[in-house]
Length: 219
Image 1 (cartoon, rainbow, N blue to C red):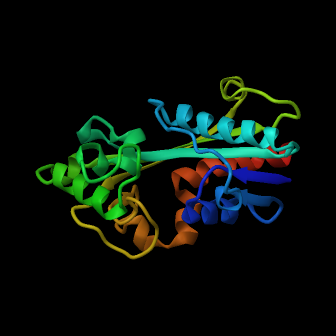
Image 2: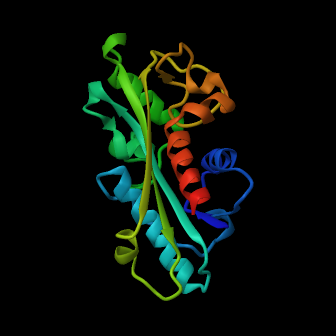
């Protein structure tokens, strides 16, 4: 089965491959230089994921590449003390008020982590509750042209969440994004310290991907 993933993020692709296994032919935006990128302007993870998957599916159809599935994810961090920010803005958190970063562009991981720590500087441990959320959207590439809006309404969603808390300082060298700051519930080490094997069994994306795997195997 051909799975076309709407991302250039090598870390995400590695997670997806590790969890879904070798039964799929994986293609990413790195393999499709002409593929358009969707503007992630929805106010929910599901909305952004559907828009990305539908944009890719519509383009693939125009390239006569039907019989494929377009997969996109939108995921992020919700911190209760910040009214669930950064949320859908997780990848662009530092850029929201930084004129040196182009609008709509992702911020460096270090900048996002530094901003999060500044905002939580006076928040005690018991109030640093947070969770990672992931929404996956799967869209079948149609055999005839279809609009992005039309395809987005046909997306199937698979979601997952991982509860935890935000540490006072980063730790560990693994993972990416907010992993050095996120300590999952029941653990005392960050995602960046726990290692990929353990993370891939308990993360928000792992839970969503397991639901997707069960759906694909069943179909």
